[in-house]
Image 1 (cartoon, rainbow, N blue to C red):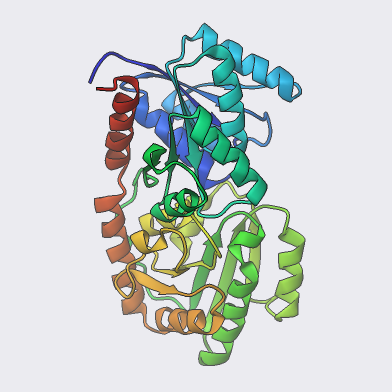
Image 2 (tube, rainbow, N blue to C red):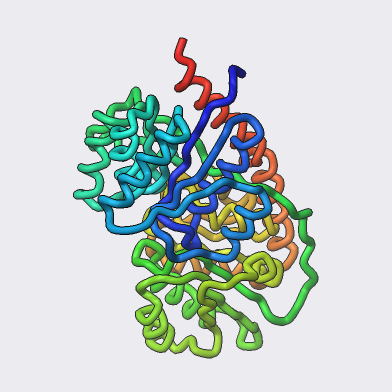
Length: 362
């Protein structure tokens, strides 16, 4: 590797979410090799887990203030002051800020981020302009996302794919048998996550399991659809089975208590939540979207099904609920798959290679 570079990572906020975690994980990964700082566009929200990670890893970071014009000026000033070589951004909003501030500051290398395999058409058009005209590269966290945007006119030679990484701080978990089975989902309360299909699956699961089966379903997260989800819980008569856990600060403990992870998303990039569940040896039932197939190997560490197919999802859950040996086998297989293919070290190595490639072209 050549000399240390001055690298800026930028993220829209420190809200709970996969992109935010990956931004901070990347800062931690690059920090031993380069001079890294993180620019956060919005001062709120600030999730305690992210703040703890910043403190523990001693990540240099700055919050921008004022209206959008003031924030862009502040951002450009930081880039100039630090003589920044490279900006790596993650989400559409911080892509926009990075492109403008980086252009004003004449930062040599600017890179965008793509975290999903779908996007609102207006956002996609803006991002296509930035990708094709401003950024040296865009980094997608999934092959499905890269393919989707290339089909929309994004220059393929400027598209890179780096899957999410994860720091695995756990050992394989062999959960004891217990009378109550806890199924868990984690993510923003937004239409993309399709919690109605999840609730229909739980309602169907109640019908096809023996009457004495005790099932609990935890929906963990936050977002604008919270009241809608609560009304759907009542609609399907699941008040006794379903608990919404809003913006918790003890997610690892919740994963330890759970038995099965459920993802009913209608589109994804590479799911950070599924990765976290696998790190806690949870078998996964997920929709066949995004790069979920890269994580969930059907009938090896979980099950895949089609979007909105609540009856098949219920059948897959039934197997895991009624047969604890299968839960343990698939959960531990998922842990090993994650450790071998999505480790922090593999993530770090890939990004170090990208930094070298961009800042020291042959």
